Length: 208
Image 1: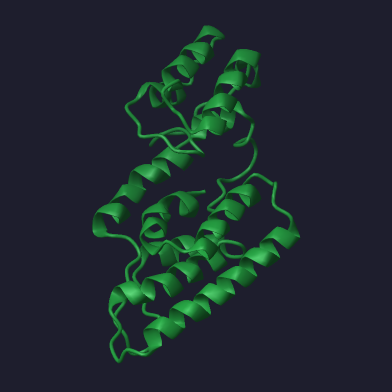
Image 2: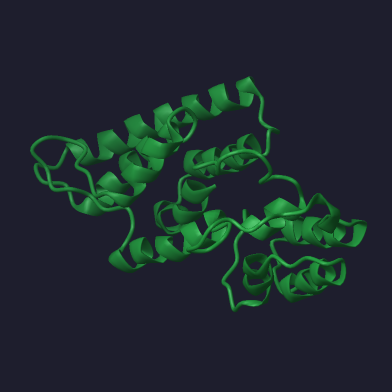
């Protein structure tokens, strides 16, 4: 989910159907809702987009960075389906497509710095100290309904209400309560929402 969210600025700049489709299928894959055929079709579309982007840039002796953005982004999205950790690395680290060639950044320096809060938003279960306990009893019908609505709509204004619902049933996980009541921003994959929905239980964070 990290790469899918962090890549949004690059996706907005590139404007390519195959890349947008890959992100949609990537989200479904992260949720266990994408089939092997969905992934295969997506990878084929990315392969065609790679060839298209390479063909556009290769005619220049020194192609401007914006012409290399499409094949660079295609590389990242292709890796997303089999090497998600490497996909995240290639998104953040400027790389060149051909040698010799100038490294092509996909994100601006500010967008790269913003990935720090994104990591905390997605993976910061417990802040800087030891992990605080999470009780299944806090996942009441009300809390789960609120979290499901937040997750489905992508509208996070109800996060403080979720904190109230958790606290009403005895939740004393300070990190979770502070996170819900904090200023955000929040994104899909928020660690508290995922815990309430059972998405973050007993498994390491998914770097997709």
